[in-house]
Amino acid sequence: MAAGELGPLGGYYFRFLPQKTFKSLSTPETTSRLRQWSMLGRIKVQAFGFDQTFQVYRKDDFVMAFFKDPNVIPNLKLLSDSSGQWITLGFASGRLREI
Image 1 (cartoon, rainbow, N blue to C red):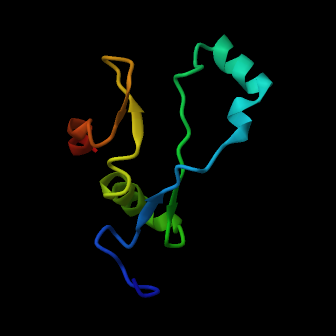
Image 2 (image 1 turned 45 degrees about the vertical axis):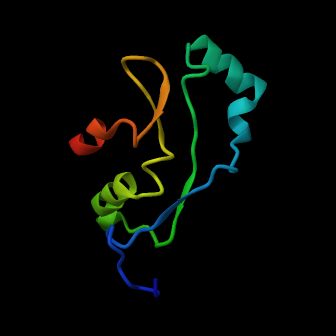
């Protein structure tokens, strides 16, 4: 994609960054608080990069492009309300239509 050229999803292309770690979530203090709030194991942090400068006035385009991006759909994990299991956005395709 050439600089300044808009892509099919509003100009944004996302990439999943599975090796990105967030050490702050595994500190003893954080682990203790998550356990205290019954959130330990119920929260995940995932990183995605994008190739355009974020512009606040295009925030709606950004969000829609994110949830429709072919690199996000098979990788973004959601906690299922019904089963309590982690599923991917691609599996929860009914939710995608609601957005």
